[in-house]
Amino acid sequence: MLKSWKLKEVVLMSLFSVVFGIVYLLFLHVGNIWAGFIGPIAYEWIFGIWFIVSIICMYIIRKPGAAVISETIAAAIEVLLGNAVGPRLILAGVIQGLGAEAAFAATRYKRFDLWVLMLAGVGASIFSFTYGYLLGGFTVFSTGYVLLMLGIRIVSGAVLAGIGGKVVVDGLLATGSLRGYAITRTKKGEASA
Amino acid sequence: MLSIIYCSRKDGCSVNTALHNMNPSVKFIAVTVCMFTLAFYFNPWTPLFVWIGVLALQLLFSRIDWKLWILFMIPFFIMAFGYFWTTLVFAEDKSGPVVLSIWSFHITEVQLNHALSLSFRVLAFSGLSLLFALTTNPVSFILSLMQQMKLSPKIAYSILVGYQFLPVLKDEFVQIQQAHRLRGAAQEKNVFRRLMHMRKILLPMLAGAVRKAERAAFAMEARGFTGEKRNSFYKVIRVGKVDGYMVGLFMILLVVSCTSVFYIN
Image: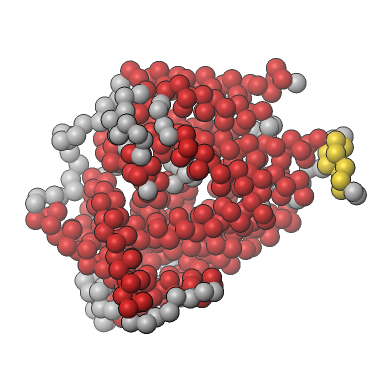
């Protein structure tokens, strides 16, 4: 799968992961403090921000695997930057990436409009929630509370990651720095990547 | 930050202790296995014992800055408290004898056990994570993932490139902020507006990241980096005897904690 990847695309994902790794850490600390007062539901509102890298990278690079690989790299870099959530974050990254990837795979990597990006955010939300449900022991919470958490996370995934990702990339596209990536080629009407 | 955490001990970075000498991939697997095993236990004792055991392992087999450790644990204590009361209020299983009543709110034994269990689980998870973070050299970790876990060199070296760029990107973050201020862009007082303002900093940073990525990739390829799998490495990360012993200790800790329910009740 990695054969078709240019090195600059992989390095790009890594550098984006560093930029967002800093953003993630900020959010994590805010979330941790907040979680003390309103419990684990504190993370749900901001959970979408954790999926943004996979959506941004897929939207730019448009190759199968872009969502999983970028989210995994982002998680690895977060661990390197010194995250007290630790190594299990890498696994969480893989799972979130798979959720986003599933949405793009369902459209056969042909469509990259706002709806698909939001769907990818929802996919990542559902996958990551299942993982959190098992590891965080959410089984002890009442069903209504769990559904509320899931609902908030899905909205957060669609809005923060889906819409937010599109806004960021469209802004970046306007700067002209994305020349040479699939997103610019398809916008010009050349053969899609 | 990890490099900062990792090197902030008084005696520098060349610490010769069992936990520091462990192969990073092996340590990674040991810590992950402990975490996943904990996910199946809903009694308060298992996670509590794991947490205490991890502290003991760290005391015996590593030299870390405990002030730093406490600093990193504080948010998790707060978080554990959040889990504690949420579980009490939103519990699914409210069976068992009532052990505590506050006004008209009754807490049963099952509820209390679940709440304590989840809170201790948060502590155990963070203890395990800090054990990993405080004793692992980030660069060795990635190299070890490549050498022992067959991570593609293309991804491994890209991650290392990103890691090396961290200080540059941090400087850039400050520069962009200063440039904004120089041109009279006022700092937002409102937290929400400040978050919206982040976009104005994020975009130039990402645009810079795109250019840096291109330059770095070009430089790597110009020096003959192909991303092919390889068998020989400049810096070799080994799996040794110490890994066997430490994994053994981790497993003993896990078995003792998991069976603790039987001899406590």
